Structures are given as C-alpha cells and as structure tokens.
Length: 425
Image (cartoon, one colour):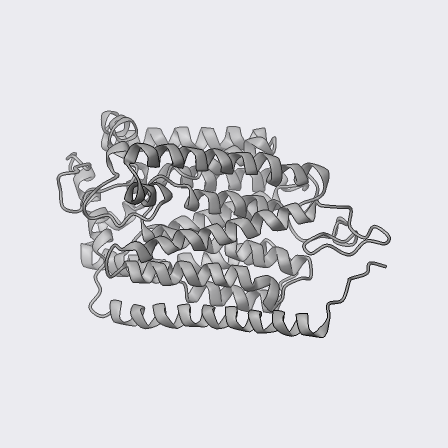
C-alpha cells in the first residue's frame, strides 16, 4: 500500500486559504475580459477575413497576393487560399456569414476531438473543458476578426486524436497514422510552426508518419504553386515571411518582441536563441527521457510542443494564443486519467488560461506592456506540463514504503486497458 505523509492542520488551512485566493484571482481575470469582450463585440466586422477573401480574388485573377505596402497585407502561405477556395465562389458578405458560423463548428470539432483522446468520457473533465473553450478571450477575438486560428486549432486537435490512437494499435493504427499525417501536413502548410510537431514525430521514431506528412506537404506545395505561381510561393518562404516582423498593424506578443522592448535588437535575438536552445534541452533531457523509461502519456508530449510553439514563436500576434486550448484540455485529461483531477491540480491550467485571456483582451485596446503577461500564462502551463511528465517518470509507482508521487501512474493505469494513446510505444 502506498502511504502519504499528512500535514499539520495549520499548514492545511494555510494551503486552503492560498488555493481560494488563487481561484479568486482566476475569477477576477475571467470577469474582466468577459466584460471587455462584450464591449468589443459591439459593431464588430470580420476585418481579417476581408483580407483573405480579397487575396483569394487576386489569386483567381492571376494578380499579386503578397504586398507589404497595403494597409492590411495577406500574411499566410499560398496553400491557405486553397483551403478557403469554396468561399471564393460566394459574395464577401455571404462568405463572411458562412465563415463566422464555421468558427463555431471548428471550436466544437476541436473540443470533441480532444475529449475523445481520453476514454471513457468523464463528465467533470468534459464540463471543465467546455468552460475553457467557451470563455477563452483569444477565441472570441478570433471570431471578432474572422481569423484562421479556430480552423488551425481544429486541425491540430484532429492530429492529436489520430496520433494518440495510432500508437500501439496494429489493426487500425495505419489508418489513424495517415489521418494524423494529413492533418499535420495541412497545419504545416497554413502555418510553419507545426514543423515542431513533425520533429516530435521523428524523435518518437514514427518514421512512416514522417514520410506520409512530407509527401502530403509536397502535394500541397505543388497545388499552391499551381494556384499563385511557383515564383510567388518561393518568394514567400525565402523573403516575404522574414519581412513580416515590425508591420505597423501587428500587435506582436512574443519573447523576441518583449526582448526588443527591453534591450537592443541584437541582444534580444541572442537571448531569444538562448531561450529556444534551453527549451530544446528541456525537451530532450526531461520530456523525452521519461517516455523511454515508462509508459508516459503521448498527449502530454504533444501538449509540451504546442505550448512551446506559442511560447517561443519569433512572430506571434495575440489571437494566435487560441491554440493553447489544446494543451489545456490535454493536461486536464491526463490529470483525470491519473485520477488526480481536482481544484488543486487544475489550478495551474485555469490560472494560465485566465492570465492569457485577460492579457489578450486588454491588448485589443492597445499595444502595451500588459499584453506580454500572456507570455507568463503560457510559461506557467509549460512548466506545469514538464513537471507532470517528469513526476510521471520520477520513480516506479507503488514501490513499497514510498509515497505515491503526484502525477505518477499506478500499475493499473499502465495496463493495456488504459485510455487512448497511453500504450507504450
């Protein structure tokens, strides 16, 4: 039997008081950004979707789609226009209406896919995930502008589900592997950052999935080149994408942007590279090592990479924080799987969520120092994710005479009947 040391009553009361205060802080953040969001939505128009629809028209007519001189330039890779191609047949007001309704569909698809990673479904886990999804300020701002991040989140959620289901399932694993590769390739083709997930797949020795993904990306690149011209596609990845930083209409919330506000650009770049290097070292020294020793959750590995994509992206606007919903749900799901989902264990998730939401909403009213608090929220869930992975592999669970470490798996949880994606790879 595992034992747990008991704390004196005074220590327990102090811990309870601190927990209550921290949850009140979450409530204050949430109330703040919800109030501001109601004000923001009055008279809203889908300004970013207007740019997408206009670029799609330029592509159809064979005109230039990339122009940094315009007031609102199109910023995404050419393949994104193929994704939006059906909306190009509609008038802009009709396309905007359809796109706005699709935002809700993308959000529901994302939620269902992430809930399906863990089975059987737990009602408390589902309820908490729904709260996370429906009250997150970046989601609301994404809908306000008609941005692409909910589509992006849905694609990542499908990848996560298929990736976890493909592990340790020889009968149907191949089909899930192809679905995961297709979803990942689309995510890479509309945003470059998911290449980090491809690195994770390669490190996990899922070489067949890597080949499928690279093949799909090649086909998507050919299709995009046929639409906008291969010269325009080449120029985007070799020149245009590197000139996006510093655009006047962008409210950038990244470590690199924060560093440039505090020190010279050269020093900021050095510090940023050092931070990325430290994150890579953490990945190999802490995140992946437990996976080789013990049946750790692949969902947590994906969560770590997605949080890193947000925290260490060199160019990131505030509404891009939408994809943090995926790691939030995955961390809650892993806590539920370990039978440790409680107000205490979920606090870092909701505190990170509230900080990011509040900072994002306030950044809507102007680009100020408060916006960078979102980086602190992302850093909080990043550290918590690493802690869960490390504690999972800290010691063999259930060793006689030792306490059951928080976040470690029991032998029962390591049996083949574990939830989806928990099999040893």
